[in-house]
Length: 203
Image (tube, one colour):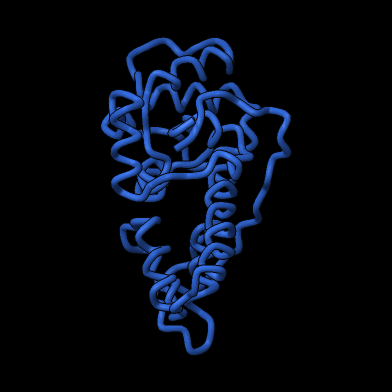
């Protein structure tokens, strides 16, 4: 899945969020909403003329299954599917950076820790925050879906109960991620927050 080790030398990837008045199926929405990188990835396919892929970001999203549904609807062959999967992984990386910034703010990390340990005093450094987070084993697709459902980001506030997503051990996380086809390649993780939640799965 990913790694607790940080790769701070990698370039941070930022993503603009487009303001949209349409839902992801191409129909007008009742209210303006900000389209995140993952939304935008799916929307660009759903809005293509003649596309049989339907996408509505207002519904509870199973990100990985939605990609599989897209590939099936578009009848992608292996080469095209692999190329699109790279774009999909990049969109996920961009979404973490969009939601949590470049990972340089101590407050961001303290709030993430508080989502696991709300009654504990906040760690006094980013390194200490990462050490606490390394004790939890969370699938990043589950994490991102939780953030989408709860509206969690730096602007809206980072709060919630992530402990419910913890698999308890690396072995449990490996089994869960492999069986559910929920693996994320470490090479695509450029943002510091995403890197912190990833662990090497089969190295």
